[in-house]
Image (cartoon, rainbow, N blue to C red; front, side, top):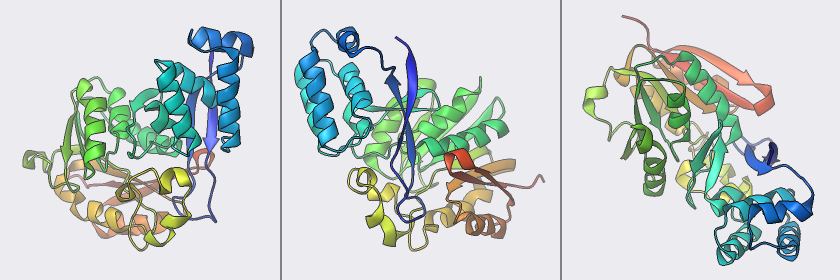
Length: 303
């Protein structure tokens, strides 16, 4: 069966930094409903399929038919399908309901409560992949599921990958995603748990650090506000507290010519740029309108 992309846009809340995101979810092409459900799972009949669509639609799911197909394809038993449907209808993010998200062409496992990788973060991956070279040492701070580090490493034949997150649930999830490709995952606060031997050796340092200002967390869509860990969202008063800490220590960990890349909002980008420059990094900025994505890149000077 053919596949297509359905973009689920959770919307912008009053232009708040970090409150708008778009998730691109792998879903099945809309063929005739009479054949789709039977091709997906033998325990699903037309009545079951129609009931799922109706339930999701009543709960406000805009792409109810697409989501119903994903739920059906992910479920292994009728009982599991019912649980998934009920959780999604109650507001659980689709990725948490089915247990995975599609990101940069990779299926990433996502546990409940863990930050769901956003499509806008693909720009961060693209920029890092452009700068990365085979044999590079990659570090993914605030790694969440490990999606960014995994996607960057995927373009290299040879690499060392280290990922860190302060959230134990995210660390467990990241270990399942990236240890299979030889990555190492640590639990702790930013650089603290990394091996000291990496100081001055990191070629690519990516940090999708939280950048939503504390005061507007309550304006985020329900999927983020209720179902994702606050530590993955809250960037402090102006949203840049974690970025400041990452930039302040970056020169200690980067190799000469190494690069620090962070995602930020277009509104915050100039301040992030200044933070990088104040910490001695050669700084540039990239913005991609289609994804509403902005990345600031800081490079340690060659010695």
